[in-house]
Structure formats: structure tokens, C-alpha cells
Amino acid sequence: MKPELVIIGGGLAGSEAAWQAAERGVKVLLYEMRPNRMTEAHRTGDLAELVCSNSLKSKEITNSHGLLKEELRELGSLIIKIADKTAVPAGSALSVDRVEFSHLITEAISSHPNIKILREEVSKLSFEIPLILATGPLTSQTLIEALKGIIKHDLIYFFDAIAPIISRESINMDIAFTASRYDKGGADYINCPMNREEYERFYNALIAADKVNVKDFEKIPYFEGCMPVEVLAERGKETLAYGPLKPVGLKDPRNGKQPHAVVQLRQEDKFGQSYNMVGFQTRLKWPEQKKVFRMIPGLEHAEFLRYGSQHRNTFINSPVLLDTSLRLKDENNIYVAGQITGVEGYVESTAMGLLAGLSAVINMNGEEFIPPPETTATGALLNYITTETVLKFQPMNMNWGLFPPLSVAIKDKEANRERLARRALKDIAKWKTQLKIF
Ligand SMILES: Cc1cc2nc3c(=O)[nH]c(=O)nc-3n(C[C@H](O)[C@H](O)[C@H](O)COP(=O)(O)OP(=O)(O)OC[C@H]3O[C@@H](n4cnc5c(N)ncnc54)[C@H](O)[C@@H]3O)c2cc1C
Image 1 (cartoon, rainbow, N blue to C red):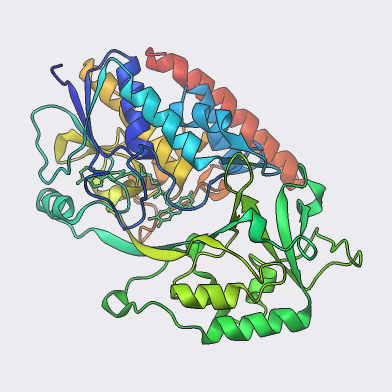
Image 2 (image 1 turned 60 degrees about the vertical axis):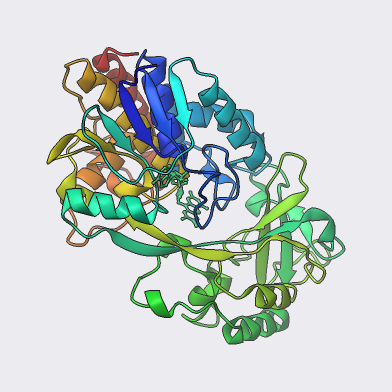
């Protein structure tokens, strides 16, 4: 096969980009360095591996994350199609069986007649044919050096942390109970209730626990949306009880009362054998995680299938470097996709992979790529990373603040979001027809 498009990185963005281009007849050469060379967070050689949570967030279109997924469905996203297929119960969120999810994506990509996968680490960037760089937040160091040579800018680093996963059978269900907050969706979460005394004991142990030494990276900040639980705790005694451990909408069935705090556990796999500790991304040393997290009522005998850990997150200064077709302004044959563009999150990275795939196809056809309108979730994200709107560019999750407001807004927040969502879905459908490749 003579490749017409090279994609580096078979993560969420690279897999989506490869699929979009290949489905339109483009011959794709996809490089993925795993399993020969692993990143700090990936565990398998599968494509589109989810490195931390198994949640792709809300399913509801009145939530901006739900809207983004709905737009991606409309645009024929492979990642979202497989996510829907491998969904596990998670209330109003779309969570997946991570193993089945990446297996099915690997299968779809490797059996596509227009895609060839090479399991190699790329350490140089070539310009002969169009190339999509989708190597993610954990881009290998050799490639970072090559990239620095081209973009003449420092790459920016943040810290991200991941949460532990524990086995279902080790949870004490005499204390923990199943429920979703405000009974929204099914009783999909396992909840570990804490009274004030238990919370304070846990809090003191957490603050005192031994953390992994971050001496070398001390000046690198955390991404606010992925703050380690112990760093959040340092902000104040009740911060966790108002944040990831908030008890609102949950009642302890043993006494019918709202606990002081609740640790929620979210199902990880299709058979419900493993659970993720929601909001418990952490950099505590592993023996400390075992000691401190076992103080949570219901988790006295928790078996840790994966401990939490922390990793770097690398991204480029996209507003300065990229045009609205996700190409480097100074190097027209190189597109950038996924988290390395400065979006944050699985679905956000997928969206930028999908756009880069479409954009490369359209430009290869000699046409000009029209960016999606900024009234859409996909367009609003693209707009954020390609427009110099903020003084200090930082990774961004999907959120309503990125959308242009309605010309006439009403008082009811939910109704306004419904209208924003309807406008977005109408606009994305219209945009799709303008591209002439659907
Ligand atoms: C530790 C951590 C935890 C995260 N947790 C969450 C979370 O819970 N929820 C969420 O929504 N988002 C999370 N994110 C953010 C983000 O959504 C994910 O990182 C997501 O996988 C990004 O998608 P991507 O396609 O851009 O990169 P990736 O999915 O990481 O894909 C990049 C691929 O490129 C490959 N690669 C790298 N360098 C090379 C090279 N030189 N040659 C060939 N291949 C290479 C890698 O092996 C990898 O497969 C997390 C990020 C990190 C780092």
C-alpha cells in the first residue's frame, strides 16, 4: 500500500482520524509505538486505550459533554459508536467496558482495507505527504525534541493524575450502597457513606500521607479538572465534602439520612467486577493509598486492581501555532490532533481527531476546509484552541462558556441549554452537508 496520509499515534484522536480518512478512500499509514514502547500511563498495546476513568461523561444534550458526543454521532465517529456499543450502567453518564472498547476499536482499525498499522516509535517528522500528529499528552521524548525543532516553541507541561480501581468483591456492601445521585438513571454507583467523625479521621490521614516526590517537576501546575484528591484536600478541611465527596442527593439506607460525605465508585467493566474511585486521582505512594483509602467505610478490605498515579500532560500553544484546519501555520503538511492541541478529555480529543481527519481529506482533495460553526460544541472547542482569546493558553474541557450566548436568553438555565443544544445540532447537520464528503 502506498500511503497518502501518515498518522502518528493510535490513541483516541489518531484512531478516529485514521477511520475518517480511510472511510473516504484515503490510504492511511498509522504509527503506534505500543506495545513495543509504552507510555507512563498505558497498559496495553490496544488502540484508543482509556488511561484513567472509563467514563465519557454525560449522555444528556443539555450537558455540553453530552452535546459534543451527540454531534460526533451525527458525524459518524467510530469512537462514539463503539462507546455506545460497549456501554456499562453509569446513570446519566456514558461509561464503557474499557477492555472491550479498545479491543473493538483495534479490530475495526486493523481490519480496514485502507489502513496499515506500524508498531514503531516515530522520532522524526517528515513533510513529504500529509501527516497528522496525534501522539497525546504522553508523546515520547524523542518526538517532543523533533517537534520542538519544527515549532520553535517550548511545549507546555501540566500534571495529570489517575484514580485507583478496586475489585467489586472486596467492597463491604453491608456499609456501601448502590444509588445514583438524586436517583437519576439507575442505582449505578456504589456509595461509601461517611459520618463527620469518619470523614475527619480520613481527612487527617490523607493530609499526612506520603506522596510521590515531584521535586523535578515542582513548578509544573496541575490541570484543575484532574486535581489529585490530596492536593484538593489541602485547600481546606471541607473542600472534599463540597467537591468529589459531596453527599447531596444520596441517602444512607441504614438510617435514611444524608451522610456527611460520600465516596462514589463507578463501574469499570461490563460485568461489574471492578470499580473506579470517582475523583480519587492521586499521587500518594501505593502503600499509603492502601492504608488511607481503606479507612473509607465499606473499603476496609479493598483490593486495589490498579493504584492511582500521576503523569505529565504535554500540549502545544495551539492558538499561535495552528490554523482552523488544525494545520501548523508554518508547515502546511502537518496537522495536529487530540489532547496535544490543548483540549482536555477523551471526547474532546476524539473530536479534534475527527476534525483533523476530515480536514486532511478535504485539503488533499484540493478544497478548503470549512471549520464547524462556533455555535456547535465541536466548533466551539476548535475555536478555543485556534483563536488567541486568552492571555495564558491552558487545556480546556468542553463547557458552555465556550459557546456564543443566545441572542435572547431566558431565566431558566436548563431551558437555555436545551436551546443552545438544539441550535448546535441543527448547525452541525447543516455544516455536514456543506463539506460534501458525507
Ligand atoms: C494520566 C492521564 C489520565 C487521564 N485521565 C483522563 C480521564 O479520566 N478522562 C478524560 O476524559 N481524559 C483523561 N485524560 C486526558 C485525555 O483525554 C487522554 O489522555 C486521551 O487519551 C487523549 O487522547 P489522544 O488521542 O490525544 O492521546 P492518546 O490516547 O494518549 O494517544 C496517543 C498515542 O500516541 C502514541 N505515541 C506517543 N508518542 C509516539 C511516538 N513517538 N510514535 C508512535 N506513537 C506514539 C501513544 O502510545 C498513544 O497510543 C488523561 C490523560 C492522562 C495523561
